[in-house]
Length: 261
Image (cartoon, helix red, strand yellow):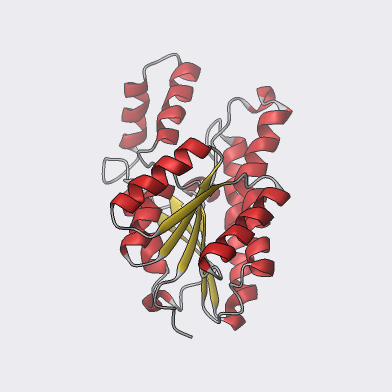
């Protein structure tokens, strides 16, 4: 079945970085966009900014780690816009360090945010979001090239993103018969607020400067630069189109040619 004229897209963690880029991309394509994050003021400001750009958008505070919050979010989206057609699981956090020194709280919060949150929200949309019933649907999980390789001093993050890739591939096969595609977009180094935090962490661990860390990272990238949130969002946008209807259960890189399979 073809997509509705103005699909409803729910995007988590959409007040900055990749999530904000995705909200703009889908909004400019004519989607009705619903955003969320954990900070009320950021949601309010982002909704105002996107509306000023001509995008039809609503937003709410939600915590993807909490089942009740996820249920309330999906109910709000359906109540305001109707059934969810596109789910973009973008909310996430970084976290790492020497593995022997990682606190329980850090490990569990990274897994809860990056992996369990993807499961909770996806399940809720499947059960109560109306996505399957429409005969058309897209689930797009923002994973990472860290979900395909080990990341130095990034065990919690890498483990969580490997989980997202595996979840994506399994669910893609499960939902293919009902016309719902499920894919992961795997950014490499992308210039976002999280990337800045990562450079700060490595600079502290290596007793060096953030500029040196960035030089080391950029040296790994054949294009010689970080990707942009807009470039990642462009792939997300394509995956929502009818031209991408036969792409499912895939984990696709946006990484400047680093080439992790």
